[in-house]
Image (cartoon, rainbow, N blue to C red; front, top):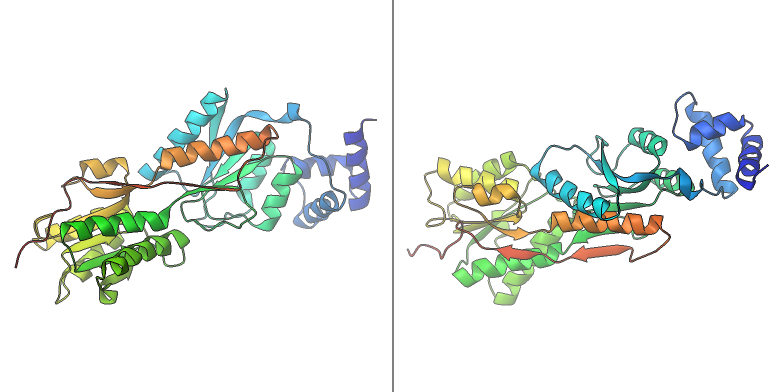
Length: 334
């Protein structure tokens, strides 16, 4: 009997189940109660079960999103695909259905497919999910635009604080001094980092930050529209608005149109991400480029390197850059 088979049998005895039940748990198959599954997982952890041999891994990268429905996702897919092709592999897409931390349902599907690596597009994984992947020898990397995974989790992100600084310096150089800000969700580190960087650049220039002109949205165009209308109807209307992502910036452009304001003559707008739609908005949007495709590529390469047994940095942050288009200009003279 081989060592792996003996180990499997020993774990079955420890968990008081059959070897076939252990196999079902290892492979994410149905037909096992939650209580039995947890007992087997506990036995696997306790006895340090060795994952299956290399030949059991399948030649593809699993890319897991909350939902695959936006230009944001398309950019990431391009990068992961580029990395997979460079290693002679393909890409499988999975939806987890949860925004920040996925539930357990998607994981059983991943375990059944046994990919060579997994790229997860959200902020963190529950401890139990990390252990289940590790026990099967399936490396994973979190592609985390939010910027707040656990420190022991391999992840790829971008320099959100620096991006906020770049946006502020651009508006300051144009001459703006009364600037509104619409951040993303306040509970996401990337949102706070972008606003923090923006504030730091204003402080450096000796320009007061307008706390009354700060709003927090949810990275949706509808939030940019509603919150943009609020800011543009303040008694002391800002001459520029920095939005925490391109979708909210597009909402601000629509709010300006509805209120009869000309962009950029009466209002400058800066977004964040540099999605493809930013080039085709009216006017084309000045934005901070977050290198989403490159982030996807790096995350996939990290996972595949781990699959080969090559460990690299636990956290990779890629640089952002300002892309100036037609939505920003010097403020109109009173």
